[in-house]
Picture 1 (cartoon, rainbow, N blue to C red):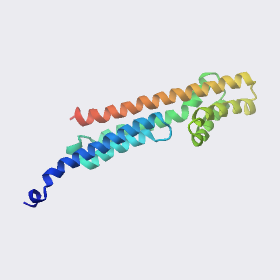
Picture 2 (picture 1 turned 60 degrees about the vertical axis):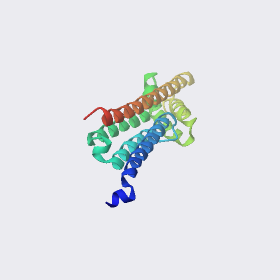
Picture 3 (picture 1 turned 180 degrees about the horizontal axis):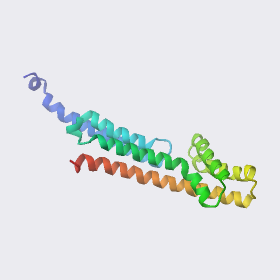
Picture 4 (picture 1 turned 90 degrees about the vertical axis):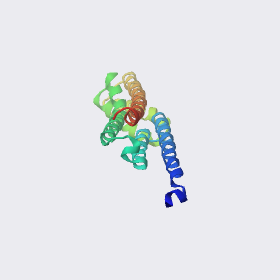
Length: 178
């Protein structure tokens, strides 16, 4: 009786719409974060799915618990690939393990100097490590540094692809998987 007097039937639809609005905004912000290194894109995508489930419940959201495991695993894969991609690029271009370590350390330091540090950090780290620690010639060290940039760019592409996969999985679980 009180529900009809207070108009709760009307507000239940608003709650669902508001939950979807918040979810869509978070999904867009997460995808932007997969491109812009300032935002933690994959974490925002995971939070969007968790928030959607919390707002609408199991029946209303359509999300199953194993979807969160899959989304968290995709997020972990992306983060791991992002950290090691510069070092892997260095090794791919013939760099030493010191160059790969320098690229890895450079990628971590570069995160504090956004946005240019993301590319310059691994480049400088690999170059300096090859020159000073591995005692390589400047041409070899430069090749190793370029490899770190190529690896870092490949890592960014993988981040975007995994972000799109996470969004695709979210919608597939909500609308298709039952």
